[in-house]
Length: 158
Ligand SMILES: Cc1cc2nc3c(=O)[nH]c(=O)nc-3n(C[C@H](O)[C@H](O)[C@H](O)COP(=O)(O)O)c2cc1C
Image (cartoon, rainbow, N blue to C red; front, side, top):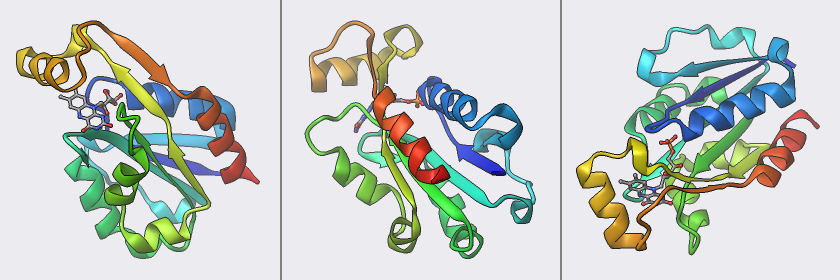
């Protein structure tokens, strides 16, 4: 396996998930790129590409959406995995549905809804206000779904 994980992360939770995936694949078998640092990798050298980000106000990062549209042709020729980090528990499937283009979702071998974290110590004033208002949470909450990550890793390597 030669995998590339392309991701974006606001407070570091998606980054943690990416590290977990790389550990599961074996560090020699997986590289990662945070789109915040730009993207100039050669996709042709990877057999597997995983794309993921986190949901804020119902949407995945704009950079992930642009990447998916820009590289959809290449992604359709890879073993593809797609995932989101999220804290919504009512309808995360809808957030996943809205996060990625239809053709990529249809092509993906693995789809991950990995949960997430509210890291109050990393939030700015407005983020704290929004999270408190919408969820009632006032302290850090960690709800990463490690079982879902394991399952995803199995599905993409199978
Ligand atoms: C301001 C704010 C808005 C958020 N909005 C949503 C949301 O609409 N839906 C959701 O499922 N999670 C939402 N979340 C939870 C994030 O998806 C979660 O914190 C995730 O773990 C962030 O990962 P990151 O640190 O990699 O960006 C929100 C979090 C913050 C701080």
